[in-house]
Amino acid sequence: MLKTATDTGQGSSSSFDVIVVGAGFAGMYMLHRLRAQGFSVKVLEAAGDVGGTWYWNRYPGARCDVESMSYSFSFDDDLQQEWSWSQRYALQPEILDYARHVADRFDLRRDIQFDTRVSSATFDEAAGRWAITTDGGETLDAAFCVMATGCLSTPKLPEVDGIKNFKGHCVHTGDWPHEGVDFAGKRVALIGTGASGLQAIPVIAEVAGHLTVFQRTANFSVPAWNRPLTDEEEADWKSRYDYWRGRERRTHSGFHNEGGHPSAADLTHDERIAVLEEQWNKGGLLMWNVFSDLMMSREANETAAEFVRDKIRATVEDPDVAELLCPKTHPMGSKRLCVDSNYYETFNRDNVELVDISEQPVERITGQGLVQGGREHGFDVIVFATGFDAMTGTLLKMDIRGRGGEALRQKWQDGPVSYLGIAMAGFPNLFTITGPGSPSVMSHVLMSLELHVDWITDCLVHMREAGVDVIEASEEDETRWTDHLNDVVAGTFYVEADSWYMGANVEGKPRGFMPYIGGAGKYREICTDVAAEGYRGFRFSKASQAVA
Ligand code: N01
Image (cartoon, rainbow, N blue to C red; front, side):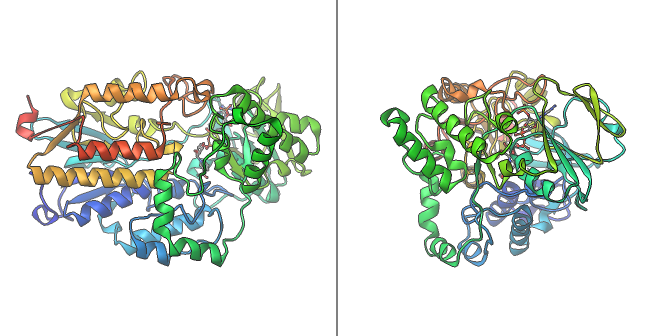
């Protein structure tokens, strides 16, 4: 049976009801909810403080692509009312301040062990408990283990020789030095033009002596039109937060301002351009939903893609540079759309140069810079904005073993499979928050992680009341869910791109679309129904019976 915090003498024990891995937004909220229900909880976190992605991604220009008033926890109205955001899209330091504020306000840190990386998690079938080991050699155990490890938490360096030889400063956007990087007057190389690179480039360009951007694939980006939030906007949100949150929860992507988008097939060319222009002027990620058939109709997609290319051509003064910046190798939206502030304008600066490496990659890093196109370029700083081993990387770095000692690495050797992106057959009492197979990165992630945390908490309370202590997803339902996931994405352009959604950015990683794109609102209904139907697709038992 599950113990309460008092039973286990929480604080001194290494035995808990629940161990949560990660103290980003997901882990913080998980701790808060479970603690309130009387479970003993320990959170293990590799970083030195809370914040997860906002702790690590401190590169210049890092900001959230979800609007500030929406990008916050919804679970506590006092918290919603007391916090004020300064801009339409908040910068990383402000979001990290918010995470710290939440940690202070709910006294979370006393149950979080920082500077602790989990190296393995093993399910003991006889005891029905997880043994967790850390890089510090500690072993802890818990009835349940919740992986709140984030989708983009394992930075990926390119497979290029010589990085260690570089005598200057070498940094990755996803593991940015806390003391910052001095770019003033320096010769800077930046490799990678995804969401991180696009945010960093304009800010670095303002201080660097010279910035060379090495681009392998041009990306589609939409302006953020960032600006200070007005008092009226804040007051509107705060006077009816329930309304806005309710709207978010019913939409496809979780954005409060998502509307009904027309099918491009029903519009004339001029009408399509008018719709695109209107969305462009609003800015932000909703360009992804501009037409309901954007990701399925070649014509709709090409109209939108050419519209963005025309914007690039109208912004970038050098026509050759503009053409290089025009994405032509993948359908718009099949790689993560970017949201920028002055990205394309930055290429009009005298101190910024674009180098196309689509045909001739960076050959190697040297002591003084890098070799590309058969010549050595000298640099003082190299910035890798080269992304992450997304969605599965962090989970598979740990040695996670379920029933019969089966390794998760083995189970996922052909790609991740899960039931709802929350649990895996053969891995009882293990939950993943925003795991592969859930909307996660295809939705407003904070909203999606709150759903998972609430669902897991309700499930554990249900188990306590029912007097059972082992839960496991059935293999049949896991297969059914995985088939559904694949059916929904089949025939869309998502499967065409060499994106990190497809695992294509990591050599040797199985190719397959990892998040669920059936819609965040629909997914919420499914999760709610599963719970209402006595956790359909899950099997419950007592630990002693679980051995069978
Ligand atoms: O990483 P990416 P990211 N040589 O994988 C290039 C989230 N995010 O850190 O496209 C040369 O998207 C690679 O080229 P290619 C968001 O979900 C959110 O920018 O593979 N280039 C690409 O251009 C986002 O999608 C916010 O050909 C190499 C780039 O590096 C996710 O994080 C802000 C290379 C990597 O782009 C990841 O974004 C920032 C090589 N060997 C990020 N290897 C918010 O605001 C890779 N590249 C919420």
